[in-house]
Length: 276
Figure 1 (tube, rainbow, N blue to C red):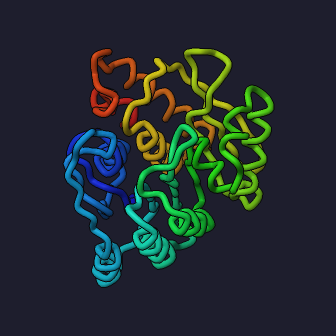
Figure 2: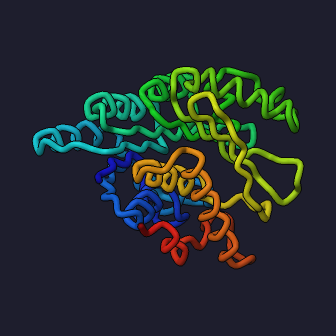
């Protein structure tokens, strides 16, 4: 199987294309990287070099079309701008077939705040990408943005009230049209646990995982890559999410306590969990 991965390539931070390539390869799937930007380190670092590669996606698409390439999956992540999101949307529409699974990770913000590259135009374009997706993997902040809700109001909710609102928003952004929605990083009552809300065919479930309450770089990318790889390999959404959660927790547990969250987690030694 082959997956086209549209994401940035960071030298440090263990995220984005580095994660997509290593995780999917471990799962027996060829990852065909399509970089949106190259960075010396992911954007959480206090200083980094970044090279915007806007314009490269249509060039790749033109050459891959000449080669008559097809893909079992397409995964998208960080977009530098609305223009890149438009290029990614065009790529999806060009290469998606009836046998292609598209996962859109709408990288827009976290903890109730938007990222520095956020714009309303970028949000609107990613909403169009979501319409083309089969699987959507937002965190709670990104789900709120996709559903056009007020972050301050939603982030104050707890327990069943929060879960019910997540269900409504997930249905709104695509669950009512048969899309799988996996919402990551949901705060739970238990102090050392984090929840992931999974919606498939109207059925929902919270899959919880232990947490050390440190927000590491790249865990969202790890979840999306493992989820897509497992789903392409035949697992149902709930089982794919369970594998992703177990893999991430094992990797967090293997990460030395003095590791900077910007560096990401020590997931390499746990890739054996993903090998078929």
